[in-house]
Length: 177
Image: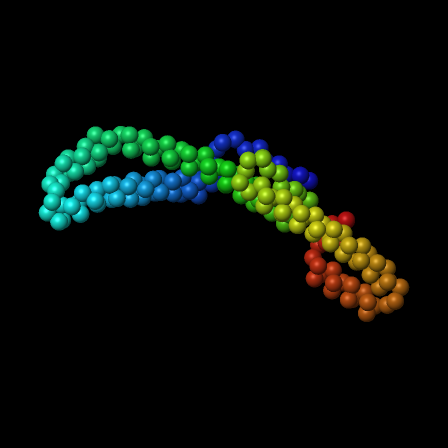
C-alpha cells in the first residue's frame, strides 16, 4: 500500500507551526533591536565624553517608535505569514513521516513521497531505502522460517519448539504472508 498525502497550504500542527512562525518574528525584533543599539551607541558614546548633544536622537527614536509603528507591525505580520508558509514545508513532510511510520507499524508496505521543494525530501529517500532493506530482510526471514517449519516437522519436537520461540521473538513477520 502506498500512502500519499496531498497537502494544500494549511496548518497541520497549529502549535508547532505558530511557534516556528514566531521564531521569525523574534529574529526580526532582535535584528531591529541590535540595529537600533548599534545605530544609537556611537552618538551616545560621544555624549558620554561630553562632546555632542544627543537630544536629537531622542526625537528621532520617538518618531521611529510612534510614527513608524504601523510599518513595523506590518513587517512582523508579513514575517509571521512567511513563517507559517515555511513551516508548512517542514511540518507537512513530518506529518507524512508520521503517517508512513504508523503504516509500517501496522505492517503495511508504504513509501515516502514528497514534492521536489520539500525540505525533508532527502530524508524521505533515505527512509525509503531503509524500508526496502527491511523488506528484503523480512522476506529472507520468512523464507527461513518456512524452511525451519519443514525441518522441525521432519526432525522432532525440540526443533519445533525452537522454531515457535523464534517466531515469537520475530513477531508477526511469518503471519503476514
